Amino acid sequence: MENPQIDLLPEELFTGSRNKMIPGWIRFFSWIFLVVGAFAILGLLFGILGYKFSISLYGLDTQEPLSAVGMFLVLVFGFKAVVAYGFLKRTDAAITLGLIDAIAGIVICLSVMIFSIFWPDQQSAGFFRLELLVLVPYLLKLKKIKTKWENVVDA
Image (tube, rainbow, N blue to C red; front, side, top):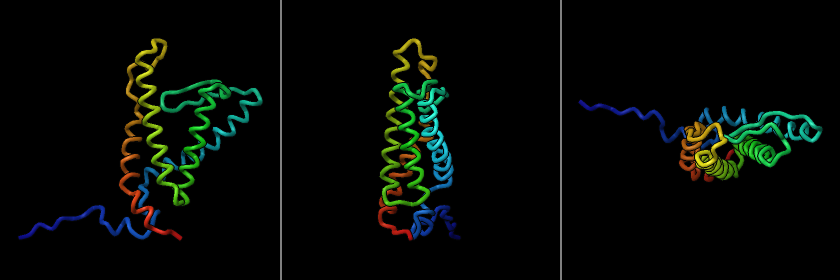
């Protein structure tokens, strides 16, 4: 007697629509980064007016929005918002921008981890950045669907 195998992710599920290619967890984070990116840009405007706020990502944090770290983080959040918009609107460049986002995030995380080992004043010295647990699967998923994404034309 044959034991039929059930394919939990059939190939047909990923053909015909870009929306079906993006998993729910990427869509969820896209909405978050779309909102946070808008707030980061608003925060920059408030920083120009003299207000201070906390901004943090990938182990970098600051209370000064107009500092080098603050401006860098606003730029990163802004880019993440653009990528999120691309995913949600299923644009042609979304996967390419997402790959850049994932690779840059991994590089920043690893750099902060390495830097924190050699910088004794850092509170996070030697800690593993948990963001990597999301960034690596994000990168792998985008690499997996890149070709299909490029070959599907969504209306």
